[in-house]
Amino acid sequence: MHPAVRDDRIWFQSNPAAVIRFRGAVAGEFQAIADHGVEAPVFRPSFCRSETPTRWVAVVDLMRLVDNGGVATGEPTARLRLKVPALRTPDRRRRAEQELKKAVAAELLASLEADSGTIAA
Image (cartoon, rainbow, N blue to C red; front, side, top):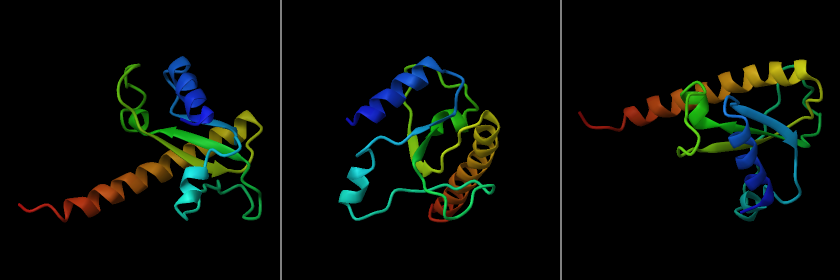
């Protein structure tokens, strides 16, 4: 397990109401994805320019997002890591968090709708 993943796990255990963590990127944390020839996912909030480097990471706890933060400590979870531009102020992090929550929720709903069409009645 990459140290960044371990640190995120500890951070979320210490912050049970948090849904998203913003932090600086750690060298090599997206290497497993790169080894498969795939680019790491990127999220740029609407208030960031398209050329802004993505040197930070947003870690989204999907179970907390879906359950609105009500998942008990120790329960199974899934986390999504995305490259993001640096969000140094609390206001920028808050605004980015709102946009990211909406974007991830919309993607999850679209995925569920697509999957529901393949289930036989």
